[in-house]
Length: 156
Image (cartoon, rainbow, N blue to C red; front, top):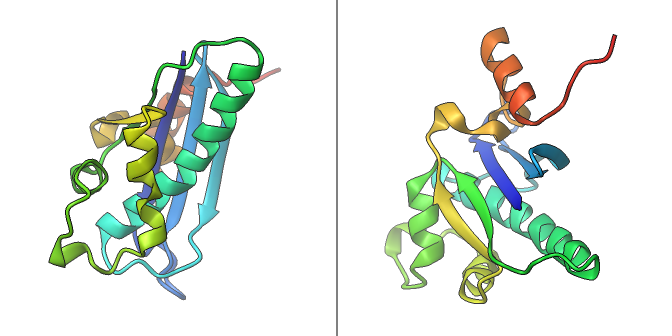
């Protein structure tokens, strides 16, 4: 089963305050796709940074689902594990909120993808967020833990 982890690090670039987005997709316990990318806009809140990361992740989930479908694999919703409950609430509730009006409308395509049962957002505690390895510096023990969770092994 395909499973995705998505995370962001709000305003992490000290020069321009842009955030980092990161995701990891695992299939059969091994990472098959991952990305770490600086966001193109400055997020005005950690919720917006997380939401932008979800969009980045969802686009990859759609592509991977299409590939798996062409290979004859199932089409059940792909779980996306994220550690920001505000971003989950916004995506699941399309109702307009004054405190989220700064999130550009094109990011709301995530709601449509959820409604079409292509992905489903699930909460994961920050300590279990595998995508943390792609968005921030971590202590060696935590870095190694997430590296192992990606199913990547060192050779030699």
